Amino acid sequence: MNELLWGVAYGPVASRRLGLSLGVNLLPPDRKVCTFNCTYCQFGWTRLEAGGKLPSASQWPTRESVAHEVTVALERCLASGGRPDRLTIAGHGEPTLHPDFPAVVRGLRAVRDRLAPDLPIAILSNSSTADRPAIRKALAEIDERHMKLDAGDDDLLHRLNGASMRLPKVLAGLKGLTDIHVQSMFVADRTGRLDNTHAVAVTAWLNAIVALKPRAVHLLTIHRPPAFPFLRAVPLDRLEAVARRVREAGIPAQAFG
Image 1: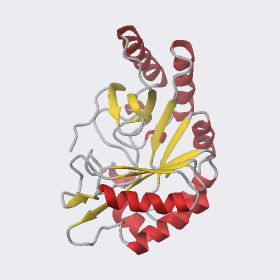
Image 2: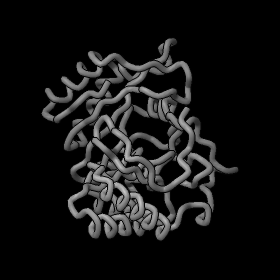
Image 3: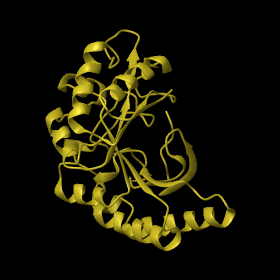
Image 4: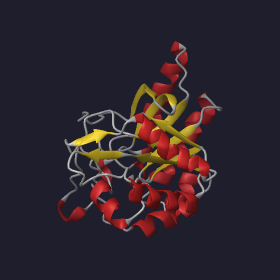
């Protein structure tokens, strides 16, 4: 598994989908915090505090420190001629869990507008908080919303993503957003217990995708060591076959092997 990210700003890193991306990590520096417990997560398993409580507000980076660290990193990139293609809110967990997330987004927009007005701000989110009005409003202020959906039924959402919530809640939140990119991870294990590539799983997932009408779908597979060590990457030709079904439904789709 990858080590946790100890700073707010990291990279720029070369992304398969987003080009040269200057990352923004809003999570506490010493732990992964997430509403999901995805089997394929490169940062390992989610371990919340007793009772499933989130870390206290004092343990998260402040909105001022986020704005400052991103300012320093972006100024350094621009001065060196290595202008990033995107400023991407991601990190080692679910960024929308930050207790001051709307204010953090406003601060990042102010930094971007001052230093690089045409630089898109993107976010990678697991979609679990999109039903919350304040989060949904903040997400609408971000240029690109890359929202996770790996499963089309409750059982697979629980087994693959470790989600305690039900799929209808996730879909309801996503339907409240406009102009989203859906990012979907496809994996299988050697026992067949965890596999969202078989026909039944793909059909259920595709039905959910069609109902959401996203701007585009990005199909991914693992390329870093996952939390569950028996997962394996899906061959690119299989991803392409699923992407073809999405395109046949009238939605742009691209597979990344």
